[in-house]
Image 1 (cartoon, rainbow, N blue to C red):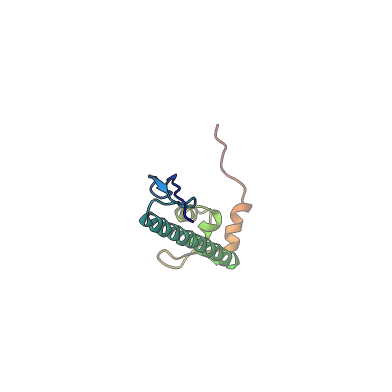
Image 2: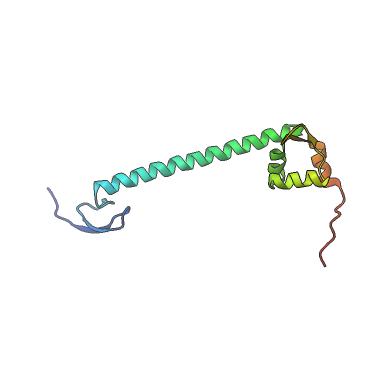
Length: 126
């Protein structure tokens, strides 16, 4: 037994109006269905990649927490600032660091913690 129904629908991919022959039809054509599937697979891959990147970043931060000697990038990650700000603190003398060569500063963890023990020398704005 067949039915001769026609249900007006809007395609979920392209948005065009069409007459569906069943009540569960979501797309106006096979190509719209395929394109939607490809888009969904692509979005899932991107989402998985973002999750993996976040997990890797957290793992790197956990590793930097246990180190005694920190790189400028590690200090920037811990302080949630830019590496340029860390270099500025080093050059101004607020943060003690050892220069091992060109772009090879190492900061002792105790020196990083000493920043927070120093009294605040900044004057409040009038």
